[in-house]
Amino acid sequence: MFESVEMINKILNKLELNQVSEMCIEPLNINYESCIFKINKEKYRSRKAKKTPSKKGYFTVFWLKNENDKNRPYTLNETPEKLIITIIDGKKIGQFVFPREVLLKQDILKTERVKGKMAMRVYPDWETELNKTAEHTRKWQSDYFIDFTDEINKDKLIRLY
View 1 (cartoon, rainbow, N blue to C red):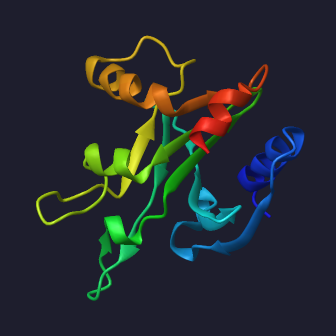
View 2: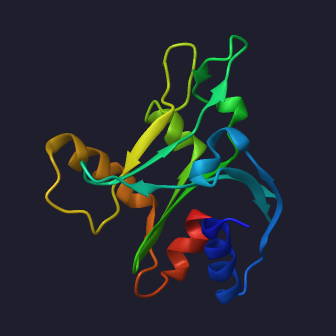
């Protein structure tokens, strides 16, 4: 099992909530621990974000192949209710839990009018001294971020999950 999914199960267990079930690995993005699973009856897509040496924040990908074998973004219909992006960076641990409506609003999902994105950078609350663009992104992402470094905000976790 992936480190990110093990962390999710550990947190859910600590809070006496149901564990991940029906996990299905998405082989195209395997380097980012890509998978889909259920918690209760709700479906989630999960990724692990990676620290990059040259830029602030953490990077992850999410794409499929089209009929011509070219990478393309996910559409709304291909996206489960939530996307969980897990960060494990030494002692810093956290998650972003984005509802698909937010991904749609932020032009991450492909639509008839929007190209969509195949990757994104996330900025947890501990990331500081960001440029204007990164700070703007961090601002909207912040509502969907849970910092597990010291303690778990159970109310926020339950609200986001």
